Image: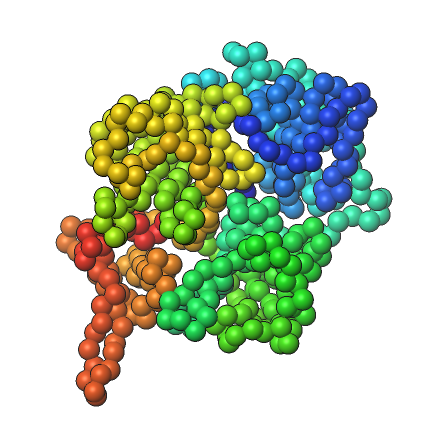
Length: 505
């Protein structure tokens, strides 16, 4: 469920700070206990484990060519591989299936292989997948090569698959997963009034483990979002769900003592968060704590942006990698007290792999369509432990206005932030748009408008009204929070501020 590497869609050289490292020198092996597998690491390669992905690099660490292993609970390799191509097409629009899924034997393992190709920075990437299932775990070995640049692996993919050893004890297979469980990327619990309260993030973007997001308000009128990391390494996982033993707050401090138990029960398409709180650890009221309770959660999706904030907490830059190009948003204020947003497109078609420095952006366009590439001597993006390092060297002669009007020379670490999305990509009904408009307003303003209406207009657009009914002196009236005019995908404008909105992402 890691998205960043594929979202960039043009990075030939990944210079990643991976840990731990294992330098191969002959008959070296790595044992991945969580996956019940031991890997023989070929000579002159480097093996790296990063969260839920294990890499063997044949040349430079972090770069193609490599072999990668991922593992997942799945009924069978055949079922797993049958859904792989639609998923790949979302990541690579120019994807070609160069060899259809075919059953084959590699060493002593019965496997399926499927081969793909797609372009990255103008080069053809050869992508091969070998999949097999043992004891309830499906293993997928992936190799990536760029033959035109001499980045090839020979028989390394088959060699690694053939020589790997499954460690499950005979007669002690892993528990069979619930066949009706389909894991979503996120699950949302809403209160009776529809307001989001808790949501589970399974994307792995913020941490390698699931993340529980909570909305608190500490006695203030506005809500804020915080999160807790649920450690899978020490969790108990079986066909009933996940029993969490270790919990960390957003600063990495252990808060496991807060809970007598915390578990996630998966059933069908739903998840239930079950909490038994140690009441002696409560600080503040109900609005400051995760409380004892049983919280049924609906499946939703989650997106990710990468944010840089100033020392005072002010959001300054953020990157959106969800489209074909990279969008860089900047907050300026032109000498005024209030900040406003400007957007720039970092053109992926002309971007270049820049060795150990990630990707080098060659063309930058303002949202007005103006080419502003001349503003920059260089602009590079580089992934570092799940975050993105943006290195800007500005042509100072192009500065207009002060520091608050420009993207300035500097090195900026943009941290990932996940956010809620509908499970489907639209089009949406009026009722769905109204519900997601409430969530959009809540997550941006800290207040949940209790009433929402959406009507379809003659031109096919929708008008959404968010409001509450207020009583003053025995007289009731409508207090409006927002009016939006959007299309069937939730994209449009805030009719009051005239700013663009995307209600569903």
